[in-house]
Amino acid sequence: MATLTKTASQKKTPATPANLKQYIGGKWVEGAAERVVVSTNPADTREVLAKFKSADKAQALAAIEAAKKAFPGWRATTAPARGRILAKAAQICRERRDELATLMTREQGKILPEAKGEMDKGITLMEWFAGEGMRLGGVSMPSELSKNLLYTVRQPLGVVSVITPWNFPFAIPVWKLSPALVAGNAVVFKPASLVPAMAVKIVEIFAEAGLPPGVLNLILGAGSLIGDTLVEHPAIRAVSFTGSNSVGKRVHTICGTRGVKATCEMGGKNPGVVWEDADLSLALGGIMKGAFGSTGQRCTATSRLILHEKIADKFLKMVVDETKKIKVGNGLDPATGMGPAVDDGQLQTDLDYIEIAKKEGAKLVLGGKRLTDGELAHGYFVEPTIFDNVKPSSRLFKEEVFGPVLAVTRVKTFDEMIELANDCEFGLTCAFYGQDLTNVMNFVDRIEAGMVHVNSPTIGGEAQVPFGGVKGSGVGDREMSKEGLHFFTELKTVFLDYTGERRESNLY
Image 1 (tube, helix red, strand yellow):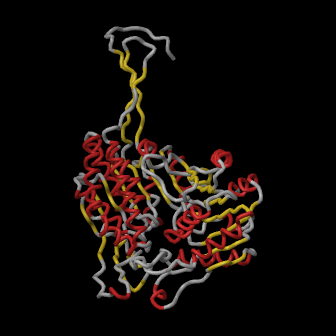
Image 2 (tube, helix red, strand yellow; image 1 turned 45 degrees about the vertical axis):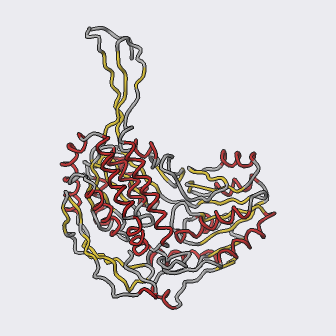
Image 3 (cartoon, helix red, strand yellow; image 1 turned 135 degrees about the horizontal axis):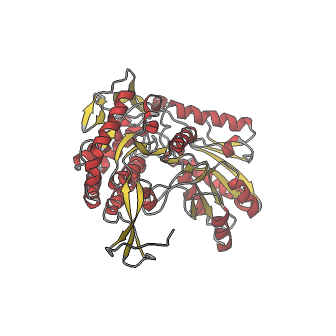
């Protein structure tokens, strides 16, 4: 996790690391487990941002009990009133946007413009879901019976758990917490241990906005200590998870066995396709953002580049030349174009896949090494890396790296391109750059992905439309939009006969 980082010209005596605590039933309490987690800046591990004692199983149980106790009162609060609290939280976040973005850069490592962009997206999501407090309703339908009112209502599930990753420490938590709360649920929130400081800020802001004690509880700690409790406990009526495929599949299996809802957003190995009639300048900007933005550490990253052979050499040279311009370094430096890997484990994964690609016979075109010169020696930095002639059967073509490693493959025909783009266990997002409408629409129709971008990067989403993938990229309901809100509700159908008379019905 990250810390109070300064560029070389900004160096100051580091502040005392924050001692973070658990938030249970409206009170901040020290973690009860022996394990102490120390959060350091991935751009400069000499700087310590925070530390905390992990929660133990008993505290996870206490958080669930606090949520159970708070749920009836929160359920009874009207949806518009819940929405107004959410709107107040969004307002506070907007006022503190730059401060929180700086914290995000220090804690997670992404460059400051990306952190500000994440803040903007998260705030927009909060505002959109706040408005749903005024629209949280069902439908009325004509009944086959006379003098019968037939309608549906949406009601909260109860206690739900929200488990989030480290790569988007603000946006992902708020796009899960916001619909859960406005729908009337009580929440136990467990963020990734690499980004606890942002999670604490989020919870503090909700409390400041007027959220009653116990409605939102924060548990910091390793999934191995407390994760199962937040999935298996009989009081948990739904789990919203974003993370690895292995854990997500296990969460979904447990919830399926219990008969409760689960939505699991997992990995991606997203293709960016540049066709022979593409606007190459437009495609270049999109591929660069998708491949190397956020150091490639997002499930929507462009990790495969599929090029029509007629433009392959020209476009690849454009990508290489542009990549050479990227300055790697501390994300608080305005000149930096790409930050560090989030920790030593992710850095090693990047380096391991680079070696795997070399052994598989891919051609290393650019990068491929850890950066250790000067101040970079104190962080988890790797060069933006490009491999050409990557075989479709190779691990680099099929497996998620979650780092700035781009696999380039060339094709001759449209059918070949579709076959290779779909030849992967994942199906989250994709991008197609081309002008021929027939090709565009055939791509949209045949690609196996939950989200399709035409002449724009693989990254991104908007509050009002669903986010999620197919195949190994996700199971359960989609997130964001109405679908994200509906996941956290039960639908109830009401048959209201207002005749006041006893009568028989032949309806089944």
